[in-house]
Figure 1 (cartoon, rainbow, N blue to C red):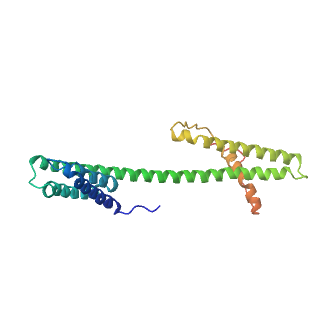
Figure 2: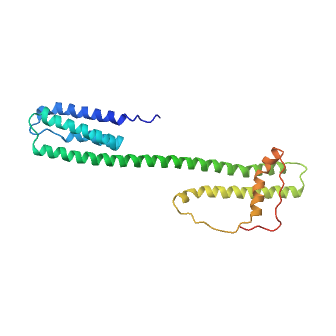
Figure 3: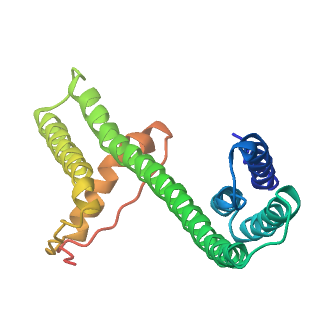
Length: 231
């Protein structure tokens, strides 16, 4: 959807001022005494909520002019002290409302930015998760094709079964990580620091991409130390 125009809040202010004029014209024959000035606060609240400080100030000044017109020219006579106090208080309330409207607008903008950033992080996480789930599936698929080979030796069958077992365990670990996302958002995750053999990590990584390497007919040369490398 297209973002609203910058002039839209001013349009709502003008419409509300026209509504105040219309209501004043309708009810003025039935009212006696001082001119009713409460209605001129409506454009200020609309302007401050929709447009922030600048629109709120413009609405305040326009509403002040409308209130002065209704009190002096529409109803006739001079403004008494009570009406003057009303207009002064209206100015104070109008500027305060405009300031609060600007704070509200900035808070809404910040919340919108946070929502966009959250959606982007969620999309990045899902893309990474899909990639990480696809890698062990490649290793499982490659091992399954080897198991179907009629000339596969018992040793090869055992190696393929081990590959499938390790990749399934890896997928289970990823799925458990996915289930832990809700705990991460609630701050209930406890980090468990344990030693890790980097040689085993590299072997597991190679197994995940072995099917892709063979499919593209690449040659992968590995040179790992015989002893474990603990980190």
